[in-house]
Image (cartoon, rainbow, N blue to C red; front, side):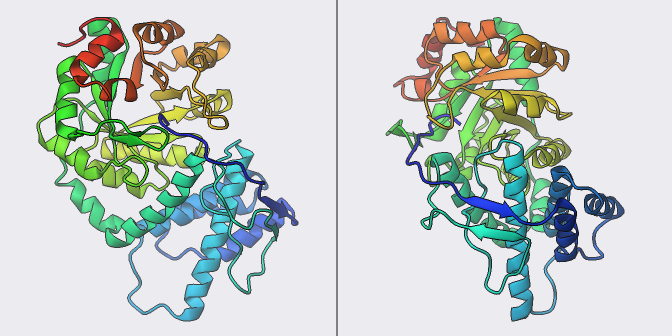
Amino acid sequence: MEGLASIRTIPKVSFQPISSSTRRSKFLARRLNFGPSMDASLKNSISFASSSSSSPPISTVIRAQQIESEAGSAASSPVTESEENALKVKEWEVGMFQNEVAASQGIRIRRRPPTGPPLHYVGPFQFRLQNEGNTPRNILEEIIWYKDKEVSQMKERRPLAALKKDLERAPPARDFLGALKAAYRRTNLPGLIAEVKKASPSRGVLREDFDPVEVAQAYEKGGAACLSVLTDEKFFQGSFENLEKIRNAGVKCPLLCKEFVVDAWQIYYARSKGADAILLIAAVLPDLDIKYMVKICKMVGLTPLVEVHNEKEMDRMLAIEGIELIGINNRNLETFEVDISNTKKLLEGERGQKIREKNVTIVGESGLFTPDDIAYVQEAGVKAVLVGESIVKQSNPTKGITGLFGKDISV
């Protein structure tokens, strides 16, 4: 994601399985006691997971547990201390299995700090913590750890059942992908997703006189096909209030909710606030989460923009049905250096051919400042670009767009 920077490097945390995969699956099936509210398809998923030894079935069980949690209602009777402890154990176990599944898919961003198990825990892992400080490896991981806690608190204040009712009052969703394609046909240049962003962790405040509506209107006047609105408050000084203000101000450009999604609840929340699209980061979300969230997006009318950083992430996403929009972030998550040749590398050869066959629209992200940068990624195969810093910092963002493309692209 544009604007991230490294903070520090720390020793790795090790999780050492000491049981077989079969024992692990049976253990999980015993621990995750699903109630009668689960439908037949989810029960089948659990049965399948218990009879197989591969990682994906384990994540299927995890997702089933999350679906039941999201769909269920609060119990009518008070929770006893023993039940509360049992829930803590279950939550910790699910987190450990999530990390295991994610690691098997090359995901280095841990969903939450590797804290030890609850007291009196007896389970299938021999736990060894090498870094007692549990320090995030980089700023993206720090954001994800904070977001995990933040979303949990937001879900308590606004349960999914109530959130679904909010969708009935939300403004109709607009065609985000269609707007990008139309802009490409009109200008013969990549459709612009202009980012409404006040600050970033690496660059600090980008625009002191920041008015989200004024910036959005300037972008629209300059020819932006769509807008990206930062909604993270702690690290980017964004907000869902900004997204609502832009939507209610009559801006016609479809809006991308630029958020760090760790839970499907956030998808419903974004749609309820007027978003037309939402970002899903492959470096954070395992395949099963991506598949599930893509389906939720389409169900509520959102366009998912799935962001990748390297070949492995791209190959993972191309194997998932239903993904039509993929963003290539040119920022290396390990070194945080930006290299726009990353876009070309990910679109070459057989991979590029597969992208064309699947009719996936590619968005270039990060490191785009000049007309030559735009021409380079367009030649590589992108049909859209997401740009923030290079235009939001301009005193006149409308003219900033003209400078970025080397010509007036306004309607």
